[in-house]
Amino acid sequence: MVLRSLLAVALLFAAPLLTAPAASAAPVAATARAAAPVAAAACSGYVALTFDDGPSPQYTRQLLSALASAGARATFFDLGSRVQQYPDLARATTAAGMWVGNHSWSHPRLTQLSASQLTAELSNTSNAIRSATGQTPTLFRPPYGDTNYAVQTEARRLGMAQVIWSVDTRDWANASTDAIVRSATGATFGGIVLMHDGYQTTVNAVPQIVRGLQAKGLCPGRIDNTGRVVAP
Ligand SMILES: [Zn+2]
Image (tube, rainbow, N blue to C red; front, top):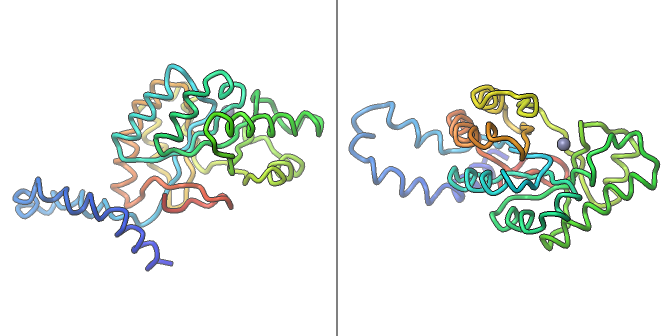
């Protein structure tokens, strides 16, 4: 397990590790502190960054570019109604190397719906994502984390693992950029960080979140089809 992670890390970070020290070879030799970024680049584990409720004409592209600059990949739990409205943004999300999951069509409390309404919320969204991106989602997050056996079973029937979160940054409740950074960087090995594709504070937090996690040896990861956070 450890060996496999180390191997994956070595492969993933071979290029940055080889190039980064070259620029700062002299200072690194001079102080112990300067060596920290190199050590931090080795991932001892992964944390998933997730962004809900998009795509959004105001924020999706900003998030994609902040993530790209930080060298991070993330999961976007998109709403079917918004994917239908902004298919180009959903396409840009997967084209940027991000993963798109299903967050229902209209953001209802799914546990309060009839079986047929539930099916429509989930399957119409997967269809919209497939038609926009060419990819069928394998991950699903219920709005408000509101779920039960029927919801989870329906998601599984449609080929999706249910994903909740371990850290809520409360960006949706007017948390400041600093507060979002603090919560997100508090994530631990295998954690899943809840954020939203809808706030400037969240966009602004991305670079510091990635740096803060890396300082703890944690790298942004992918959520696999069993809901575990793994190497991208
Ligand atoms: Zn939501």
